[in-house]
Length: 222
Image 1: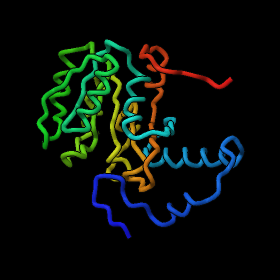
Image 2 (image 1 turned 180 degrees about the horizontal axis):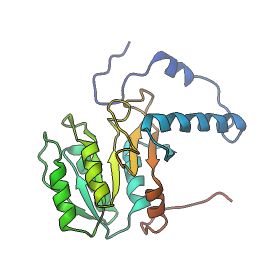
Image 3 (image 1 turned 135 degrees about the vertical axis):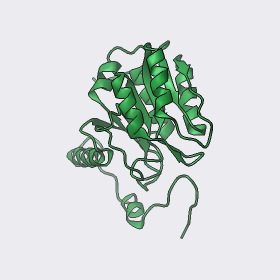
């Protein structure tokens, strides 16, 4: 028995491993359609949301990139709430796509203070979105997402949440706390193999996606 003591991937239960050993099914047939519907419904319960859930064949970082690419445009100003390495990764993704970063100073090992976020938003109404890491794996610090969400709602900004190491492990009420895009991955709290990411997307975020201008491939099936 392998006993992993790392931030991820987490050990997989035996029944999960056995499920992965089953024969393939038709990925365009009724069996798969039924499977996706059941998975989507189950994910909504875990996310505590009525929002649509996107299933991505990617790492958690791929979900973070998708959140930026699909809701914001080059030149948009975004407030990055980072308290560690993975928060800084979110910043790097945003910078790669030409976003203008506003980054309050929260030292590693501390949590993000909602009052600092509130002050920053009140001084700069041009900020379009706030991105926050719920639980920072590199330091073990959990931000008060409920309080941060309350602040962001008052200023009517998009709230993008990295919940990769928190969803399924810590309370996260997506709808109640006003989280517009919540990203997580399969290999942490879900205790299944790596390679999938799950993203909750609010109607507000979907509306933002209709006008964003970040370059990306948006191929559609004929």
